[in-house]
Image 1 (tube, one colour):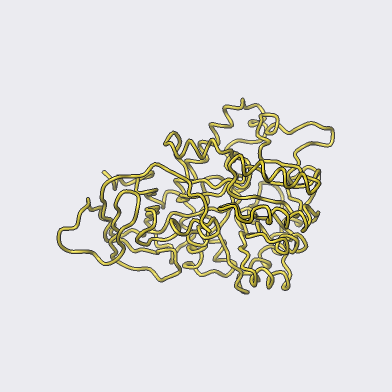
Image 2 (cartoon, rainbow, N blue to C red):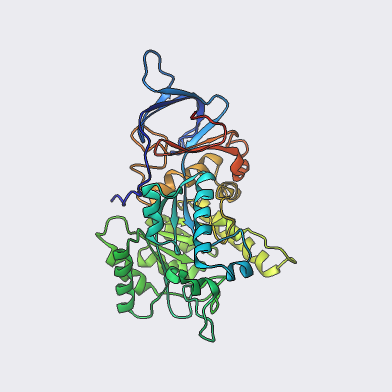
Amino acid sequence: MSARLPEVPAASGDVRLTGATVIDGTGAEPLDDVEIGIRGDRIVYVGPRRGGDVPGREIDLRGRWVLPGFVDAHVHLVMSTSADAETQRLWFPEEAVVAAIGNLRSTLEAGVTTARDLSGLTPGYRSAIASGALVGPRLHLAISMLSPTGGHADPVNANGSLPAWAERGLASGCAVVDTLDEVVRTVRALVRTGADVIKVCTSGGVHSPHDSPSDTGLPREHVAAIVAEMAGRAGQPVTAHAQTDAAVRAAVEGGVASIEHGYDLSDETIALMRDRGVVLVPTLSTLLRTPPGPADPVRQARQERGLASISAAVAAGVPIALGTDAGIHEQGRNLTELAHLVRVGLTPVAAVHAGTLAGARLLRLDGDLGSVEAGKLADLVIADVDPLRDIAALADPQRVRAVVQSGRFVKDLDALSR
């Protein structure tokens, strides 16, 4: 079943990219001295250089590497990482919007041409990108995440007050549901508003005011009801924020398509995920971030357990897709996740696959995105570093020299398109 393909402005005319090494996102080994033919917004040829009278302006990419545009399957683009909490508390609402617009651009320029925002962004941003008013990744939106009262999606403080971001009207990212009727009604409203994915919280979270990762969230029965509600609706899979084994088990048994985090998985739950094809989006960039201040033994223990859990899932063959939890992780540094995926057992080629075709498949967009293949949309990343020798270098957006989205150069540090 295909999902709604987010629109972005498309290029016109013919272009030939020649001489690069291509890592196509399928998991295949790289190909040297490749020609990529682009007509309008689509790739029409990938292979050896063609001779004769081939249409299109040639762009010489010798000494560079071409990869598919990356898919970050877990971002929060309304959350600023460029200003501290006190500064943000004093923002006017429009300053928060401007910050989100900056996050959209920096995410695209990092090499992410498609992003799944798992609470916070509203469809107005998606529409503005489609019209060309904003520059940013193609967007799949959850709009809100769902939890019980006092759970991960409940921003209300104990005294009834709201944090500054919620007071500014950004509480669209939160939906509190306690009964089955509330669950179904809220999900239907999200679909009506334009949600591409439904995000549930079957555990608590680190930054919630009233719970912790070890707390329970929505029960399996509520998850199953949401999955049943989504059955037959093209493009609205269900994903679960789940940090404990019990939370992951409840989500998987409820029928979700993917698990976000998964930092405490038992062998039995890993086997269940593998057997059902449930994708793990481990957000290691957020797990492994180290905030300023003295060492925190609790955080270190959580990191060690998380790494062991994800490594075991990788070894068992659970499908992996790249996600960063950007907003908690630094915005615009999305490809930091690639080296973390290698750390837990993926090869560099497999890490690229997790960040491209696997992510597109999770979003049900793999018919159009995720690999450098004829017929796909021309979403490409052009780098000046060999990712298979130094995949960590892609974390630096300066090593991503150009980004092509629907055949258009939306980033071009070396003036390749001129």
